[in-house]
Amino acid sequence: MAAKTKRMGTIKQLLQMHGQGLKYKVIARSLKMSKNTVKSYLRKVSESGVDIKDLQELDDPVLEMWFHAGTAAYPDKRFEDFKERLDYLVKELGRRHMTKRLLWEEYRGDNPNGYMYSQFCFHLTQHLSARNPSMVLTHQPGEKLFVDFAGDKISYTDRETGEIIWCHVFVACMPYSDYSFAMAVRHQTIEDFLYALACCLEALGGVPQVLVPDNLKAAIIKASRYDPDINQALEDFANHYHFTVIPARVSRPKDKALVENQVGIIYNRIYAKLRNQLFFDLESLNHAIREKNREHTQTRMQQKPYTREELFLAEEKPLLRPLPPKPFELKYYKQLKVAHNNHVYLAQDKHYYSVPYTLTGSKVKVIFTRTMVYIYCKGEQVAVHIRDYKPAGYTTNADHLCSRHKHYLQRSPQYYIRQAEEKSLLLGHLVQKMFEDGRHPELNYRSCDGLLNLCRKTEQADFEKACRIAIDHQVYSYRFVKRIIENKMTREEPAPEIEKPLPAHANIRGKEYYSQTTINF
Image (cartoon, rainbow, N blue to C red; front, side, top):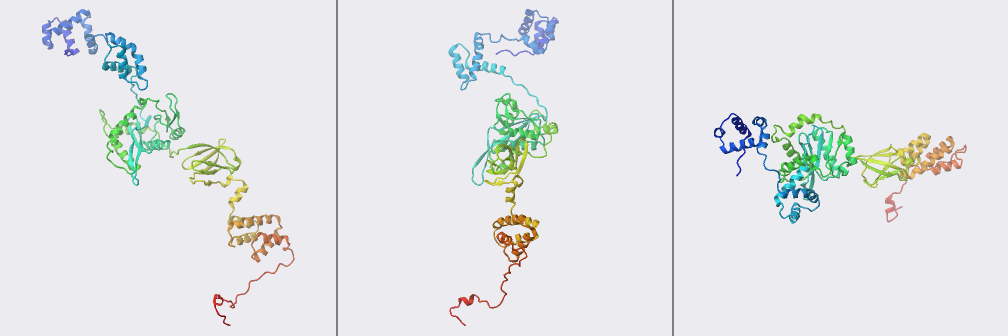
């Protein structure tokens, strides 16, 4: 067994005592070491020709390296041969299905006297580590928010069906304080991702400067190490909250190492602690996740006198930007053509929305949210509707219709009575009696249109006299008024005799009379 290396402070004492002229035996007894050890150190100094005073000025690590430099690194021929193969080994190790064991077997086949498997792996790993050293990243408080989804899912049970519903867990982390947020969502869709992110910002109480997501499909359209394409919905979300999106590089988890580490911690401090609990809905599951995550952030960190929450509240939260006053609504974009009925068809709802009739046949841009539908043409907003989820339904703004269609939609008894009263009080009275006659209102609409048209073509006095005659005879129809005017019955000739109803009297045969079997006179 090799002797333990002496402390360099002791060796400096040895050199100092030798410089004072003390003998080997005295030095050995004073420093509690063997006389041969003293001789070996002083022999090495003598052979090197270095001044003892210069050695005493050296720092302890430098002096130790001077005395114990060891043998030359890898002096045998095996390492020389291995170095020549390193580039090839690294290249082959990057290929699919390749293992170190297979590479070693091929290496031993070419060089039977080469390294055994353990030394082969050691030297290869040393080379790979030297090629890709890890960098210590420093983060500014309140600057970045790392987000990711945990690889493992968590579940709750449907109370009615007993079905186990598996959920994805959204994880976020402020890298400066390592303050974390966790939440379960049903899917990794853009809707669930942005909803969880909005909940995270609400929980933080502010907005960081930069968001660093993984290259998940909900956030990134096209993954690229240098220039990824960000999903338009995430861009809208970032513009609403006023932060910048800088995705992590493809296959570079170290770009967001802290959130990757948080996922591992959450497995231990949330998943494991909830493993024996049964949940029946997503809300109760998320409530339990929040409680366990709060315990995690309020736990004192190792080798630090504070918790993650204390550091976040003290140094990060005051630097976060304020939340926007209005909540974010996810926007969807469509390019649609206006149909002949001046409506566009939104396939998501199977519903029709109107635009001005002058745009019939044009292409318009439709932006819709959960509650609203906005329609644009040539950069100008031409229509706004409240979103309607009724299939095969129509949402129509009367101002978008042409005059003929607008008139058709506005038809009602009140509409015609109002139009008639504006022309003549007698006409208004006649139209009102027409709708009180008991017929279905739509059966009278054409008669009203005819009377209004007849009013425009006839002298005012003649028309009003014809209306008076119709009211007196209790005949409320367009045809009767027209016949009076065509037959010139409104002239000076006496008006036709009014048929009067029979006076009331007691000489009425009731049902008893007609139901008797014998006639009694």
